Structures are given as C-alpha cells and as structure tokens.
Length: 50
Image (tube, rainbow, N blue to C red; front, side, top):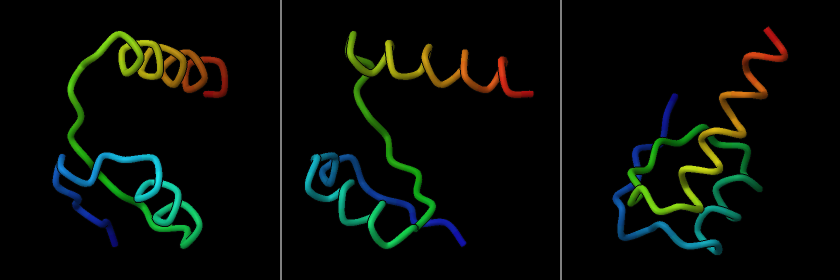
C-alpha cells in the first residue's frame, strides 16, 4: 500500500503524522536546494548500503 499525497500537504506536520503511522507515501515537492541535498544524501545512502 502506498499513500499518494498532493503537493499542498508538503508540510513538516503532515509528514510527521504520516511517518508516525508508518505509512509509505509518495509526495511531489519543488526541487529546492534543500530537496536536492536530501535526494543526494538518500542516493548516497542507497549506494553505500546496497
């Protein structure tokens, strides 16, 4: 199961609730410098742990 969330729900509070409920989710986000850094960190983690 996967929760599909609209971009308007892209807030720390909403993401926190989703994570507390241990739900898998997919949410679009604007590609800001902070988001780009998060993507790079995640990709690095995947590469190091595969």
